[in-house]
Length: 448
Image (cartoon, rainbow, N blue to C red):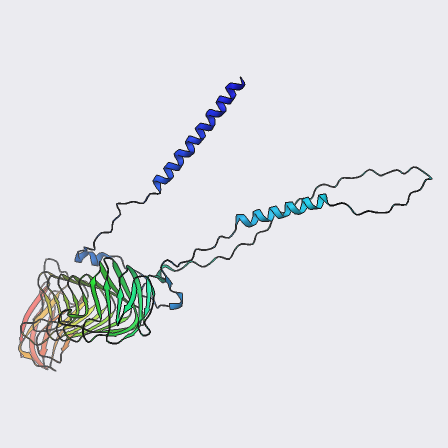
């Protein structure tokens, strides 16, 4: 019988050990990283840019003393600790033990022999309950705002940089890491150079960058560069070269957004140039260039903001598609007959916003994909620099076009333009006649 009990106990122990081992193996298997989650290239279609959710608060004013470099975030402290409670209990028990073993103090008694002494029965006091140890909660640190966690910080004026993937080489600020970088200060005759396979966000917090031999911002490689204009700041970039033909020049998708102001001066070639896409979501943006104001190889998408573009050749040009869905946009092109205020080599889709164009030609929206009405006026003869042309309709001025350079075409599209609406055109104060809009696109010639 005794042997039987021993065998049963041994069998139970072995069963328990097997279960523990199985649980350990299961935990290890579940904690293994997923090797299939490789990053994908940013191959967004132009329509995808219009459907991307907007980030909120990432362009709010920056308090630099609250910024935290990625990897240096603190973890809130625990409110109670088991070690403190255990140590308190141990100390209490030790004190009680020492009290029991300590000898009592001696007393002198007066003894009488008249009568035998009668001792009163001793009463045993009930043991006092030891109060539970009191623990003081440890101070809790406030959680770090995710918007304040950045990959790096740089003051261009002093050259001081913090964080991984950001450093100076001569007068070039190199960004070679993924993430968000806050940039402020002045950099005369220098540039920001981005070279990484990952997405990079530059938060411009009041910068002034000029370059006499190349771009002010150059993207050799990045999955996407996002320039965020911090609210209340004014940022200026100037430069360009024949090889890298823009004050902002990128080989990949460029996105501009935010509540701040950006001035772009293309002193050699274009203002903004991209071998991929240019996406403008909001911001107060002014572009001035000796050639094309904004140039993209694949697509230009604008969904918001205030945009003023002046180019001495084309105002805005896409060698692929053009999508305008919002914003207040003024574009002026140069005086050459072969150039346009607005040019799209393939489909031009117009679904919203207010668009005003001056130049020697303007692309017409595709009627199959566009939903907002437009008016294009061809002026004969051309208006010399300093002249004006006006389109009025619906009881108000739709477009008062003025330019320092010669032009022969004006184009306007706003939500107020309706099918069947009468409009009037004048050039240099002379009446050119009364016209009526048709569906989607109305093109007329106005002679003065």
